[in-house]
Image 1 (cartoon, rainbow, N blue to C red):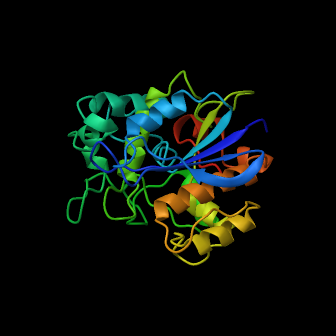
Image 2 (cartoon, one colour; image 1 turned 60 degrees about the vertical axis):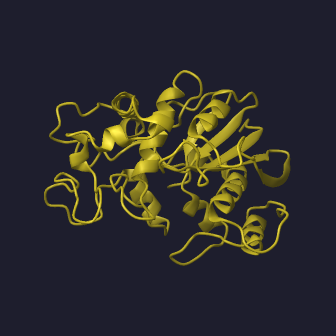
Image 3 (spheres, one colour; image 1 turned 120 degrees about the vertical axis):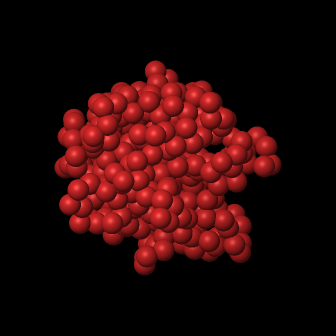
Length: 293
């Protein structure tokens, strides 16, 4: 592959102009340890600042965002079965979310999850579940999942439905805010596999930090690393030099650092760009998680 840099972004869907939960780490194809990119403001990154950085990348960079780039589609033949405005593909979905959230500052997604029709498909809180959060006859109470998330489960991690907006493990808000960002990258940086993999330039992908953690030797139900010692043990298994530091590290930083090294370690694997379940239809609608097979 022809990437010279690898950028991992631990994203956040939390409210507010700046997010302590957003962490960016970069590493080079030439080697060396991954390094955190400091935010322009000590209060944390603004989502718009991350968007601007990715839009203006000059070196060919593989960018991984820890968020869901789309919603389930294959299970029902629609993102929102029963809603006439249900989009036909991921790009139309991104545009719809961004349009309904036009008045929401900071790339937030409140205007979408409170929309009278869209809100019916999401789990909002205990006792506040949309009447279409589950499909009729659903065997799981966890919500709907994409084919990529089924592949993740087969690899020993446990994803959460992108329709879930509740709890520490929720991914719905971060994914929806991320889709607004992806819409605004249109024409600037391709998003694989919704867009074909180009022969040159930077590419954005969806990542799941738990998949990287598994390859870094992290076992058990928890995949978060909260010490420099644990992080450096995982980096060693990925062929990366250690990062400087001792004692505790926040899991946002460790996720970004580890996943940047993981992207460098695995990016040339042809199988990861051609998973068996990734058809043209799936790519166009649900997208995929890089690293899921």
